[in-house]
Image (tube, rainbow, N blue to C red; front, side, top):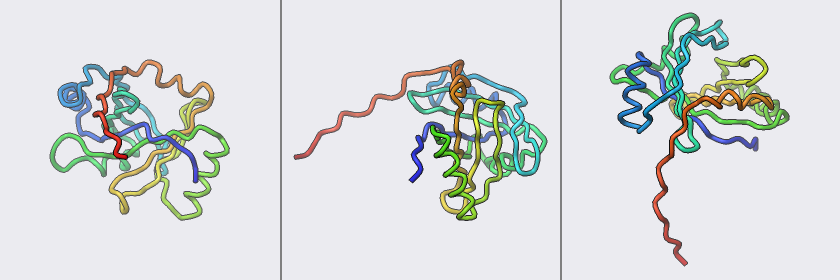
Length: 169
């Protein structure tokens, strides 16, 4: 089993600015880092997207608006009604050896990877297509030693407090 941490929930939206406003109201995220016209490598070419990011506790909320190029992997998942639709969960893979093993495992079972690339020398990423099984993609990310700096400027907000649990003997 490849060790990884689920740390991100990502939604696609037809309007990043409205989605950021909704996140402020519904998710108690008063501020998000918005990055516009970011190029993402896909199997069909480069997709251009607008991204908004914030951490709620340990979980990163990501909002994505497709904005051109080879953005079908995002555009095809846009909600038919409403503003947000789950696109993927994001998982961190810490070790290089685990990253290589994960890619080999995905290839061995014939799982489609419609998105795969790198942000400079900071982060490798790949989407495994699990839409038929669970309705969304799983993104795997493997940061280089300097890669976690990508999240340094992402706003962070306290997450909800877990309800007290009672242990039954």
